[in-house]
Structure formats: structure tokens, C-alpha cells
Image (cartoon, rainbow, N blue to C red; front, side, top):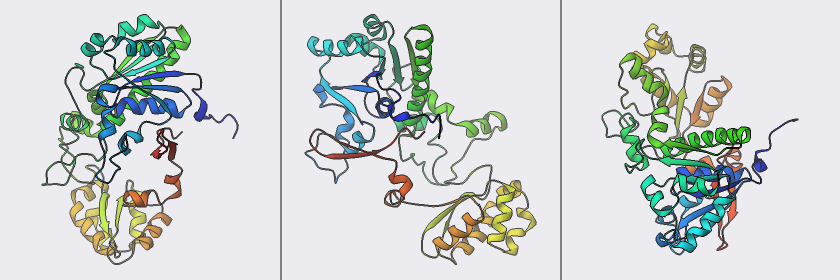
Length: 358
């Protein structure tokens, strides 16, 4: 294909200094590394590096100096273990800053100024520098991990099964969302730099990134005074959507019948008179009578194996998916194509998935 963008080496020649740890900041650094940039990751020598190095699963080797979690967002980076309270180590960072294009940091302002890596201190070293800053809450001082943000921004309240305690999203999604916001901000800052020759500071709070990601759930409250409740995988506005149905071979299939055409097709795949009842004739009525509808579908799904049902649904172009565990996910060729491998200094092969998929 002509004029196709090759993302792999797009940022070759760009230098990024990563003064951030855990997930959000390092995943931004990995984005630039995947696209060919030189990424220098500075880790705290006094704490044995990024804290996620120690976040190991029970079955991970105890003698490795990094966890699978750490590997997930640290790829193709040059890692320097330094003590920034020592003048010599701080000077090493300053040397990299002088020739850097971008710095990624999640230090609190007071701590950064005290160490010598505050915004003004870094810009004094390099006037064209772009600084990307991540913080938990807008004030920049309140400590926050992902589950705290999920609680404070409504995700935890509306996630989980009805009449059960809230359920945390199984990945630190608020970190991931904030990282994407910062990537966008940094790309705009690079465009600004190219046009004006000037550096800039862009800042993203995880809190605001989370609020921005509430989309329809936020608007359901803002416009309809509806407080979203726990519905498991179901959807407050559409049915059957998100409903989990067991098959004869004890697999689960999820439906996403988002249009009237989809529902009419479902009625052809499962030609049951009950599905044609007038109480299911519109999406609004299906939402109101969801429990009755799901009960009918559940009985039909239990009569056949998952492979047979999935083929019939997909042949009818009905959005549906098989609920897979991680082993089953990566048995698919499309998922295998997403894996990035890198041999670390100790000779161990590490794996993670791409953050760049365009």
C-alpha cells in the first residue's frame, strides 16, 4: 500500500528521558520506544529500581530482578539505576536532559524541586524540552493508585454484579487511559515545537483521564439523572447486550445485539416464538424485560455446543464473543502477532504486548 505509515522507526533520532515508574509513565515511554525513539529510563537505585520490579506472581523466579508486570511496559529502554540525591548521579541525568526532546515524570512538584528535577530546573538545562507530567489528582499532591481512582471516579461503584460488592477492573485501566491522554498531549507538544521551536509542559491527572472516560455513563447522569448501577456485563441502554449465556459444552458466549437488525437476525438463528413476543419488539421494551428475554435465550444456548452457536451467530453477522481465558486468548494467531519479545541483560527472554497497533 502506497503512503502507508511505518510506525516502527518513526521516532528514530528522538530522545526521551523517563523519570517515572509503575505503569502510566513507563507505558508512555514504551510507546516512543516501540516507534524507534531512544528511551533512557532512570530508576531509583536506593529502592532497587522501579517498584514494579518486585510485583511478582507466586510462581515467578525469586532471583530475577524484575517481574512480569515490570516487563509489560518496559521494552527497548536503556535503564540507569541512579541515586538522584548524589550530585554525580544527578549530573548523569542532567547530561541526558540537555540532549533530550521529551522528559516523562510522575514526581510530585515539591519532591522534584527538592531533588533538582522540577520543571523550571529542567527547562533551564534545555529550553526546547517537552515535559510530560503525570499526577494522580488535579492538585498533584494526593497519593493515588489505580483502584483509588476507580473508586473516586465512579468506576468501582458501577462495576460488578447486582447485589454484590463492587469489582475492580482487572487491569489498571485508569493508568492506561491517562497514558493515552499524555501520549496525545506530547504529540501536540512535538507539533508545537516543530512550528515554534519552543518547549512546553503538558500535564495529565489520572483523575481527569478517568472522568473523561465515563462517556455515556456520565451523560446518563448529567442528562437523565440516572446513577449507573452494578449490572455485571450488561448494558443499561441496550438488550440483549453483555448477557452471558452458557452452552452445552460449559462455555460462555456474550451477545452484543446493538441494533434492530441484529435482533431480527437473532430471531432467525433461534426461531423461537417467544423471542417474537411483542414485549421484545423494540430495544426499549427489551431493556425493560431483559430478565425474561435472557431466560429464553439461556435455555436455547444450553442445547448446543459453543462452536456451533458461534458459527451460526457470526454467519448471521450478530456481534458475539466466546469468553476466553488468557491462555485461550493467546492461542489465536491475531493475538500472537501482538507479542513483543526482548532478551534482558541476564539472558532471560521477556514478553509483552504491543502498545502501538496502528
